[in-house]
Image 1 (spheres, rainbow, N blue to C red):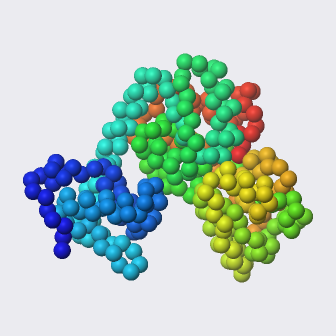
Image 2: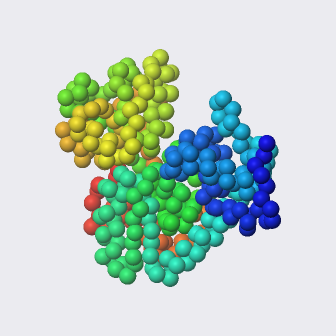
Image 3: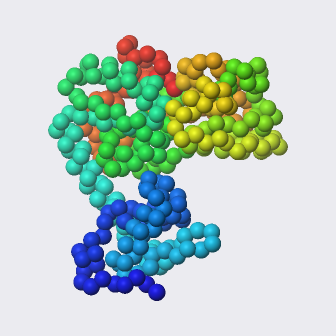
Length: 321
């Protein structure tokens, strides 16, 4: 039986909240209340409550639960399409307003993934700030998926990140450098004494990984399967700092960009050689396709390009991570 329909105008009288719409879309995308809760950083009962309030406001059922996943009703599908269009338009509008404010204030916000934010950006931002002291700079240290979300919301002007394993069809981007992923093992690990590690050796050692490197692991697993080997399930780690701590504690092996691996202590860097596998990743700058960069943001992108090319003498070579 559908929820009771409120009298009068549904939106004005029931007060539909933006969070309710975003939560409903998260459930629709993931097909799971628990996964939606994780994405929204709230509890599962809160997800259920928000969806129920939205259904009550609209006077219809939007979702049905099956044994395996959550399914959209016909009204749910219509609501999803309308909600996505409305949110997209609102985000574009907010992004334009925020960009206009930053342009007036000569402010540039850069979203960068943790490894780039820690190793590459500080020296570049310092050098840029010395050359352009009137420009206010802000660095957002965010996960891979959150960097694009920051661009979509208008919270960041540009993102510096890996260009692989993501859909960049809605963005402009520029490839600036490439880096190789290497196997990093504690110095006392059985693999530490090998000149190289292949599919046979890796089949007995699970990788400690952050979520960002799951696509890389998938490529390794696919290449190993072609040779008749299976890659053990990974040990997932919440963030880069935890991963580095576990590596220091000699709790396992991991994959890291070569530039960061060289900074680790008491470890061995071992080339991973699996037939048909290439572990080179592309890195660069990403920005919204529809939005024009401010003069300050465009200036920073040019400076970043020169720095990566080695034209800025004040920039250390640690940028190649």
